[in-house]
Amino acid sequence: QVQLVESGGGLVQPGGSLRLSCEASGIIASTYVMGWYRQAPGKQRELVASITTDTNTKYSDSVKGRFTISKDDAKNTVYLQMDSLKPEDTAVYYCSALRLTTVLYNYWGQGTQVTVSS
Image (tube, rainbow, N blue to C red; front, top):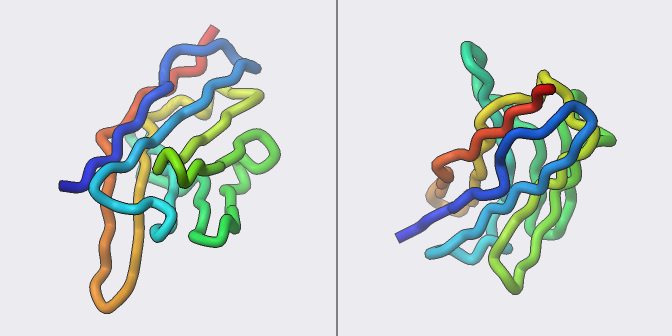
């Protein structure tokens, strides 16, 4: 059974930092493209950052320079370091694992709430 378990969300003041973690079980995360998505109330889910099997990273324009995605293959875990947080970063953050062979494998975590507010 595949599980992606996010942690690290919470309430933080503008300008603060949080680090999200996504621990995978049932898959070898290093063989998947891992991503962090977010969904704010009333908005569509959007891709925030992704990291490939060979550690290439991509970021949305809204978080570039403030967020950093990384992974620890030994721990089967992906991280999202979020710095200089803004109120507009408030959302539920989801971890995703994607792999395309002859079959598309796409798994999601349950999400973790991030609230940026003074």
